[in-house]
Amino acid sequence: MRALPAEGQDWPALKQALLDAKSRDYSWKRGRMAVFFYYLDEALERIQQEAYMTFWTENNLGQRAFPSLARLEREVIGMGLSLMRAPEGAGGTFTSGGSESIFLAMLAARERAGKANPNIVIPDTAHLTFDRACWYLGIEVRRVRTDRDRQSDVMAMAAAVDYDTIALVGSAPNYPFGSIDRIEALGALAQQHDLWLHVDACVGGFLSPFLSRLGVNLPGWDFSVPGVTSISADIHKHGMAPKGASLLLVRDDALRQHHRFESSAWARGTYAAYTAQGTRPGGAVAAAWAVMMHLGEAGYLDCARRILDARRAIAAGVATIPGLEVLPGNHAILVFRSTDPALPIGAVATALDARGWLVSRQAEPDGIHLHLNPLHAEVAEEYLADLQAAVAEARGGATPAMAAGRAY
Ligand SMILES: Cc1ncc(COP(=O)(O)O)c(C=O)c1O
Image 1 (cartoon, rainbow, N blue to C red):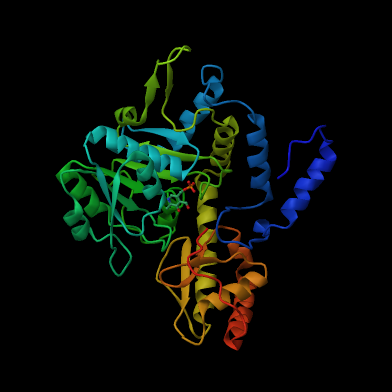
Image 2: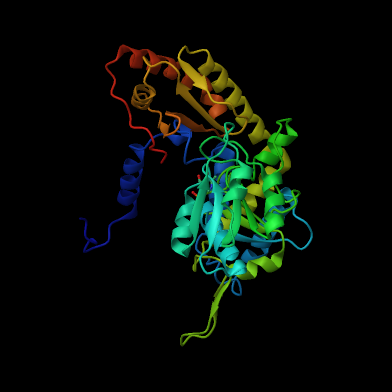
């Protein structure tokens, strides 16, 4: 274990040590991974960095001290609400990421319902961060099998609802398959039982509106769907902001009271917060604001177009390789698997990994999972060439199989 050095060290040597450490990671900037990163180009990267550095140490907990951050945050929330077609009177909270947005949504649903043994009913494709949030919050999670299209089976979800159910969840889209749940039917079910309906658009919130404008046929998922209570949408995913930026949006601003903490039970007076975080990085708000203002609708449309180009190129290329099958889909998530027992997909994954691609393995079906972003349009050909080579190697039989189910 390293101990704190007795004497401080000079920055140039430390900087070099950081760069050396980083040089052994997978190269996200060369598109070598389809998980964990979102990248457009160096121009946007500079804007992200400079905007972040403008407020690099300001604490967004202290909005009385930094009214600038309060205003920037309001504007970011406003842009999110208008993109998600929220009605007059809607509100939102800027959070550190999808997990915090979802945690706050589940907390608010629990506090609103006030049930003794609360449960939520969610499709089996919903992100595991719901289970984590509910573990923290003492809420039972009822995962309901999705149908063949990997969309919510609303009849089965209705059957799982009982007196103690506080919320329903739909994903737009889910992370394993990129499919959007039947939000309209879930909205009707939520209204029928007076349930909170949370739409997890952490992946899709800043992409789906632009895919739709490009003619991709997506089912309704935003606040225009009656019964949708809240939406989580990550600006640090397809919103293209640096990490630490997500929105929890609610149809009615008054619902935010349900995830507001306030207490005066100590010597320092009243402490109140809408977020799980206390100290909050001002840089994350400033950078999200700058990226959204810089890209505008035209910029996001361009990102969506490039993602579609990447999807089409990679899906078409994979489909030409005997033994591989691309699962149906039309979003940024693309999954393929082997249909040939002589071609173990785990061995393909190992061979691809050896060529410098970080491979994300899907557990069910046993496959390879890609979460595409604009950069992948530029590296699609390289990826396909390496995939072909990896398939040939895997067919050779000497390559060990990478274990399935390592999504992260
Ligand atoms: C659909 C979905 N929801 C929620 C999350 C959690 O978001 P975060 O990792 O920002 O906490 C993710 C992350 O990939 C996701 O894909």
